[in-house]
Length: 227
Length: 227
DNA sequence: CAGCCGCGTTAAGGGATCGTCAGGGTTACT
DNA sequence: AGTAACCCTGACGATCCCTTAACGCGGCTG
View 1 (spheres, chains in turn brown, cyan, yellow, green):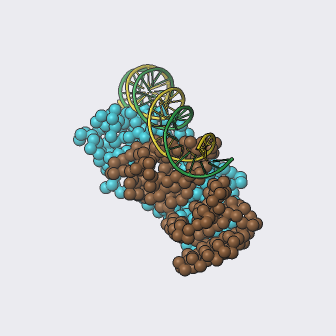
View 2 (tube, rainbow over the protein chains, first blue to last red):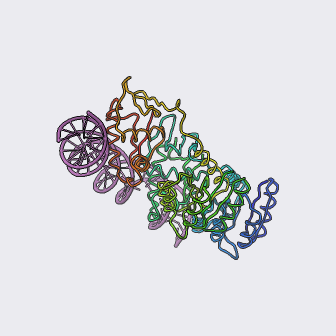
View 3 (cartoon, chains in turn orange, red, brown, cyan):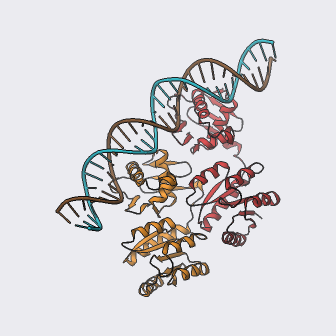
């Protein structure tokens, strides 16, 4: 049984989610504030957290940071359409994904399933870490990429970007985190680099670079690797 | 019974790990600092070490180096998301694997099992110790190389480079790792040596040394042995 | 509706990295 | 003591790759 912790201060939304999720066989725990959420998380050990950013007591980002000190439970953020600032800081704080309010329940459910799947199938040890898509395969241990049976040559930086995205496959990786992991903390603002290198990777790997299916942009937020 | 040494200064994390690991039948020893960790390691002789990089007293890399002076016990590093620099230096110092904080307990357990398995599995059986390419064959057990039926003489250093590459055939070996394994950790920066010795090996082994097919350079990353 | 912002794309310059050769110094063996 | 093997070092040209700039596009905002 999968346990979901729903954190929102609007009873209306909590009620809707409780009904929808229970109907799909989830075990639902709710909290209406940040402090209550932290308590519930440590007591009930949910398999996934759905967190509204606009809470009355604690800032959503704070809740994420506190959770992240001891658990890597997937966190899906609910945010109003306008809070793109907040979305970014939530992702940087360690959120896994986000859904914009007002949200379609189907989208939330899809992201929920994806998040749970990701967390229960842990990344393999390096020695057998081969990720496959319809278009290409990535071998993390050998640092090799194949497409249509032939090897594709990547430069060090191209490889760095692809590796970070691959290790976080399915999950939205913020621009800041990508820049920090590949170029270093002092390059956090050089979002231009990402555009250049993502374009290069798509040209080398995607069947139709102008309509990427695996290296996806989330405007203003970051990038996502979809298998 | 497998003994795990857990080194972390956050009681929350130590507690979580102690519970999870004990439940899986591991014998758990803990230390909250680097000095205590070194003492515990020499007294309790753990089968695997889980080490947080952010310790109050000693730098994580220092702890790894000190451990590596007398033991080859597998070390799994815990690192915060942003410390990608630290991750690299930890691996170079001799760590076996790393897990990003916050970590899923399942992933840590998988890597733990993999590390223990690796450390207890002996070297390659003799029958697997002969690697063949179209141009030459390498006998790891006999430390001999043949080309066109006749033996090729290699100097000790040439052999060292070829052996490391051969044991990791197909995989990319970073310059740092090659230098560490062949010359020692204090030569990590002497990338020039590699260029000289790879050129020599190619001259002796490759049919067309200027267009190597088996001893391949990946610019900026390292070298790779392709069969 | 016009301007702005973020994104994608391409190409070029210059700096970093690599391959190659040869000479000097050290070690090991006769 | 002499010689041969081997390792290191330096120099140079060739190659590779990171960075930067310029331009086009679509969407959002004032």
